[in-house]
Image 1 (cartoon, rainbow, N blue to C red):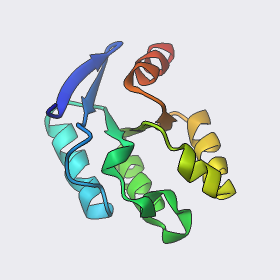
Image 2 (image 1 turned 90 degrees about the vertical axis):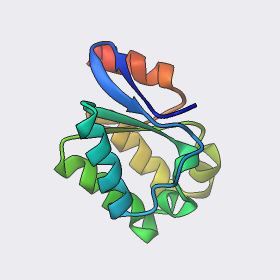
Image 3 (image 1 turned 60 degrees about the horizontal axis):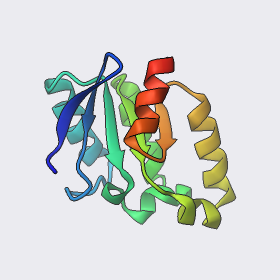
Length: 122
């Protein structure tokens, strides 16, 4: 399945395929942000398979660096998929996910339908 621009309740979302290159760092995030902006998206849905394990280990600062780039450019980021194994391993990550999901620009969701529903309520 290729990456595709989709309309989620009036919000243009670039939905990334699970089998592409991983987002490892800020430069990878900038590439995603640039492509998304070029294609007219205001949100990006990235499957968990596209993130390295370092993203889910907060002490590495990878998540913070990537998330900060999305915030700087005003682009929403949805991490899509099952992250339960990462949550089980880290109370700090559980807190980060809980706080992120209370916000408006970074969400950890189980699937694209949950993103579609959340954007419809926004």
